[in-house]
Amino acid sequence: MIKLKSIEKSYPVGAGRYYVLRRITLDVAEGEFLTIMGPSGAGKTTLLCILGMLDGDWTGEYNLFDQAVQKLKLKERAALNKQYIGFVFQQYHLLDNLTVAENLDIPLSYRDVKASAREAAVADTLDRFGIVAKKDLFPSQLSGGQQQLVAVARAVIANPKLILADEPTGNLHTSQGKEIMDLFKKLNDEGTTIIQVTHNENWAAYGNRIIRLRDGWIEKN
Image 1: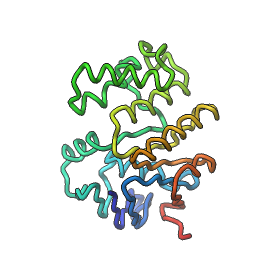
Image 2: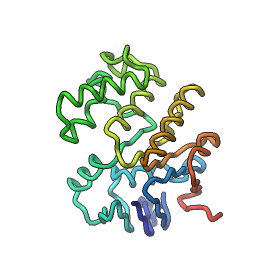
Image 3: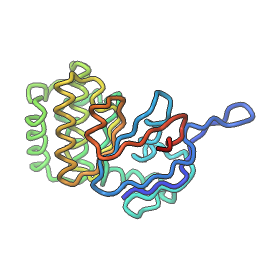
Image 4: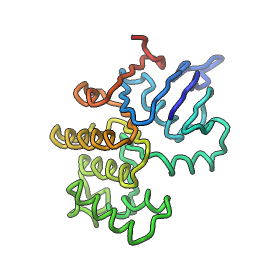
């Protein structure tokens, strides 16, 4: 499903370059639940953003469903993202001028889902996440934990083939975090591929494989 070969990300610094990622070579099978761990500054979020095609400034080879991402134009990458990927951002990235229900509707609108089906999916997801009472509120009216729940709900509502989650439980109470991880496990059992970044060893254990980054490199086991 995913094949990375010698992915590198760097910035010019003076006469040299600062490398955020170095020679990342990695295969992820369809249906896998992969956890990425490592200290702050290791390159975890950067790698996730490259996988989600939110960062196009890198070198190397990235194949997603046999599509060579490095050869695609920006518009083609965006279309691939919308077709296959749900992304849970560490900082939520909810649209401030839209209500909770409208935020949930966005991924469905990208996929040309009929209005009646979208409405039903939003209602079902609001109920699933216990946020029906919040549906007409704006993100600024929610707590951090509530915004995180909405962000996770938005990522899964369109049943993506790949979920990329950057610290998906970082702002949640332990019980809420367990609910989200149990949901991810259920989705994974049903065939959704999941790649998560976390510092939490308990949540990491939900995956079937862990890779660790340090200073931009994949640590050797």
